[in-house]
Image: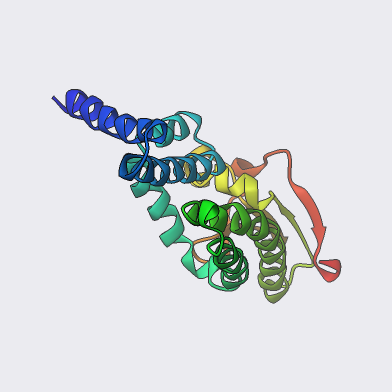
Amino acid sequence: MIALLFLLLAALWFWLLLGLRKSGRRWLYGALALQFSVLMTLLMLFLGSGWAALIGFIWPLPTVLPVSSVLLQHSSFYADFYYFPLGAGLCLALIAAIFPPLRIWTPLIVVAVAIPLALPMAEKHSRNLMCQRAIALGASEIKRHSFLWSLRHTRTNFLGEAHGLTTVDGQSYAWSYRRLDWYPVTSQPYGQPGYIQTACSKA
């Protein structure tokens, strides 16, 4: 029954997308549906879920919940820099809105500008924040994965991985994006390759 409902709703969304081949309101609804599908697909790809990204394009509504959950869990991290990429995207969208052929695509323009701007800012903010908290613990060096890697590996405890590691007086600490701080761990389960060695005095 659930599978049948899923197929019916997916068919309805596909019907909306087919509106791009029509004109008038059907085309308008199709353009809005396409933008929402592309947005959910991109977000799920950033979160490292290929199948969910495919579902996000065919029928994006089921992907809203996991995407919203991740964004809300880490809202305190984004709060320090989100306004700049979002503001840049909105400014460009306002400019695009002046031209009637581009007006309908302004939501996609906002995303296309905001995400590329946000990722390097998030990477720098992540590195600086890890270093600030590490120095407060008494560490001068950290090992960390990139922010994009962390987006794709949100369940680090479950997988035995860590976003970042540091050591103070023989005690290992792992990084938490929820706490925005280090927490003590045993060193062995978190010994994963691929970390970026960072000297905090130079970060």
